[in-house]
Image 1 (cartoon, rainbow, N blue to C red):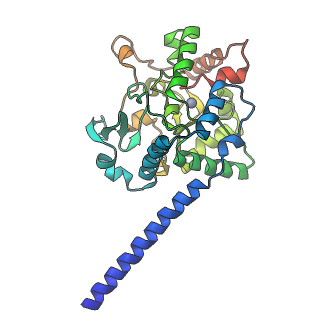
Image 2 (cartoon, rainbow, N blue to C red; image 1 turned 90 degrees about the vertical axis):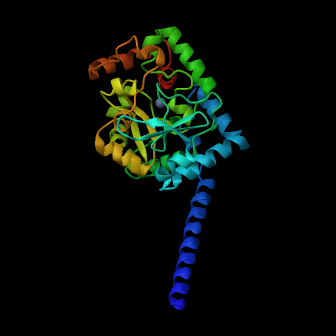
Length: 315
Ligand SMILES: [Zn+2]
C-alpha cells in the first residue's frame, strides 16, 4: 500500500511539474510576440493610430499589472468556474441565468468582460494596448489567413477613454447624438477601451464582401474572436452591422456564440442600451440590410478621406 501511495504522489508531482512548465511556456511565448500591429496599416493618418502606438510603447507598469491579471484569467481554461473569486462580486444573473460579476468597476458576464451601452468601463481603465491574449490570437489568425493568400491587418485596436471621448464628441456634433449612437460609442462604452476588440482592414461596409471579410466571418471563432456587431442584430447589440469589428472572448466561448447564431447580447441574455434612451425610446426594432448599408455609407462624408472617416466611426 505504501508503494502505491508513493507512486500516486510521484504521479501528482509529475503532473504539477508538467502543468507549471506549460504555463511558463505560454508566458514566454507571449513576451516574445512580434509586434503585429506595426506590421499592419502604417499609412493610416488617423489620430488614434499614433496615440495607440505611443501608448503601446509607453505601457506603464500599472497597466501591465492589469493586463497580466486578465491574461492569467483568460488563459486559464478553468476561468469560467472561478468567476466569482477572480472577477469580483456577484451583482446578479442575466435573463439566461449567466452570472454577472463586477470588479474594479468592470462587468463580467460568465467571466467574459462586457462593455456595451448598458455596461460601461471606468474612465481610468486603460490597458494601453491590446491585451496579450487578444494580440496573440490575432497574430495566429493573421498567419492562418496569410496561408490562404489573405491579408488581415489591425486598423484600430485599443482606444483610450479620452480618445473615444473626442471621437464621440466629433461625431455627435456632426450627425447628432441619435445618429452617432448607432455607430460610435460614448466614452466608457467602447469595446476598443477593453483592449480586446480590433477593427480589421478597411473599416468599411465593403469589407464584408471581400475574401478577407468572408473568411473572417467563417473562421474568426477558431481563434477566439466573434463578429461583435453582426448583421440584423442592431436591436440587440445597439450598433449597426460592422463586418470589420471583432472581439476576443476566447476560443471556447467564441465557438459557442458562433454555433448559436446569436450575437453576444442574445447569447448571454443581456441588454445594450443607454440609461437615458432606455425608457423614452423604442429600441431599433429591425433595420434592414439596405438601410444599414445606406447608413454606413452616409457615415463617410465626401469631403473627408474615406479611411479617416471610416476608421473613427466604429463603436
Ligand atoms: Zn470597432
